[in-house]
Structure formats: C-alpha cells, structure tokens
Length: 462
Image (tube, rainbow, N blue to C red):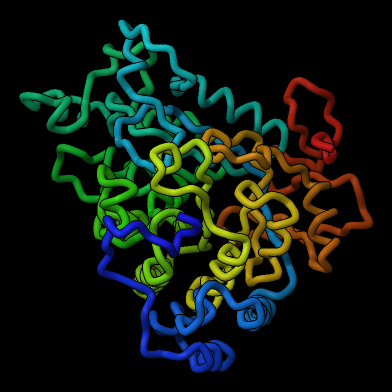
C-alpha cells in the first residue's frame, strides 16, 4: 500500500474516515477555538473527506491555524531536555509487528547458542550508565525496555509467578537463573537508575502490566512502589493506536486500550506525571488517529496529569510489518505535518506537543515546529529503538545544535525540566551552550563520546 490510508481489504476496519461534517465547518471550528469533535478532526487531518488525498491549499490552512494556536497558548519558546536513554533489555516475546527493538527472550537463556544483537543490563550496569551521564550534565533518564520473562516487580512477585503450574505459558515467566544475565527486579532497576536528583522517566503501561501480571494488584499500587524506589514520571508509550481493531493487527499480544488507560490513571493516581504518544503511519486510517486523540483528551479531562503529547511517525524499514509486505512505507511528510497540527487543535487540554528529530530528522523536525509543536525532544545520549527499526537520524543532539536550529526559525531556545516546571531561556549570543538544570550540570557543553575531551560536539555529525 502506498500510504496508511490505503488499507488491504482483509483488515475490513469498522471505523473509516467518513463524516457528515464539511472541511470548511471543521476549519471554522478550529479557527474559532471551539472544542473539536472526532468528525472535525477527521476532516482536518484528511484536508476533507470530499477530496482524494491531501489538498495542499487546505493543508496550509490547517497548519496556519495550528501554529497560531501554539503561539497563543505557549508562545515562541522551543523547549528541550538534557537526557539519556538507558533501556534495560531487548528480551521480549510480545511479537509486535511494528517493532524491531526486541530479541526473542529464548536467545538470552544461559544454555542458548542463538546469536543475537540484544542486551540485558544488571541494575549495577544501569547505575553506572546513569552515573556517567550525570557527570556530563544530563538530568533526565528515559528507560523503556522489552518484557523480559524474568522481570518481576519485586521478590514477592517472583514468588507469585513461580507458584503457577506452568508459569511460562500462563504468565510469561521464567526465573532469573535461566538466563545468562539477571535483569533484577523493576524495583531494583528503578532504584539503580535513580541517582542523585536525576529525573527517572520510565515504566510504560505495558511494562506496568508486566510488573503486575499474574496478580490482583492494581496499577496504582504498582506505580506507588516504583515511585518509592525512585520513579518520577511515566511515559505514555505502548499506546501505538488506541483503537483495538488496529491493535489486533499490529500488536495482538499487547494490552488493550482500556488497560493502557487504566495504567495511565494508576500512574497519575500514584502522583506521577505522564506523557502520551501516538505511533501512526502503518495500517491505521485517519479515523483511528483522531479516535486516539479523543481517548487521550478524555483521559486528560479526568486526570490533568499529561504534560505533553508526542506524535511518533512509524519507521518501517526493518519491521515485520514491512518485511511481511503489510506496509511498504510510513506516513508522508504532509501526514506528519497534519498529525502535529491536528494534535495541537484537538488536544485543547494539553499544553505541549513534541516534534521528533529522531523520527523526522533536523529539517523536517524544524518544519513540524511550525505546524503546532513547541518541544524538540532531548539530547538523547543513546537511542536504540528507532535506530533498530531503520531510523537514520542519529542519537545525539548538543545544546549548540539546538540553539542553532531553533534560532534559525526565529524561535527562542529554552532548556526545560522533564515536567516543564523549570525553564531556562538560552541567550544565543552567549556561548558555550550546555545544561544547567541537572544536579551536576554547570553549563559545560555535552559531548557524545564520554571518553573524549569536555568540549562541545555540536557538529560531530557534519
């Protein structure tokens, strides 16, 4: 198929992008600041269901309104963080068809002779990674990992899982001694990565489900225990598309929409901020994208705990969906722009919309900042998920890069904390540029090579 809108007949989705609304009425509602309906959103994200494809003139009208809304709501600042990705393990048996991050967990067993490119880190190794990054000035650690069968919330959880008659098939569990490397427990990993005053952003709804599988524990109690161990906020990833007929195609082994929402509510009930995401551009259609936005907006209406929304364009090259011929590409540039714009207009209760340079690259990422986005991710001293799926835009961004790019489009670069409660405007005429919000940050420029000199690597990729 040539795009996410052209679906094979065998999917036969019930939800289709058809409405009784007109594009003109939807555009007027957006321009007037009215709360958009799903029908409005569908008309805007398709540039009208009365026309084939995306109409370039209509698209620019949507982008202009979204960019104006961004300016009215959050101003001209573009924010970013100094952060590190420390993913604990790639071992996973979930079998999501959009993912090339995982490696079959059997390959990690001590007696396995299967060669694989994956890894598992012990809590001590995770702590070492974070300690090194803190010395370099970062203040956010983002950790998203595979669902390793030996991963349990705590020692009590190990005992519960081991008590099943057939723990492997019933609760996806094998004891740590089966594996070459013991990942420890989730509590141990959280405690290990919670170094000093670093902000630990971890435990997706899918991971939280894994951390309570086989028990009657609720999500709030799981997240409270993780928070006590050092967790500061939870990423609302594992969302993909929050419509079950799409999940049945791309991730049938994952939690359902209701469970994702329940996990998010549990995290926020435990006092944690969260983010929310969408991963689009595969088999879903425009109606699914907007229905996803509706789920997120309703959740935010109830909780108020979502700090930012992150549209993630599907990277297809090395994924099973592509290798099996289900898709032959991802979203188009125009679809990326409209996804950002409609997210800004539809999610009237979430202040911040993020553009991803990891997914889109620098030039496209900057364009998305003019479509309604106001955040530009982080320095990401390592990145494994998008890279393994076929992403080609690297994994390191210096503060100098950020200042150059953001000022080039006439916006103001701002260093922020994960929760947006701390912000520091950066003067582009006062180099060198480095983080100052971290517990060990002193303004020294970050470097991408921890073994190198403490000098700025702003143009290391040039």
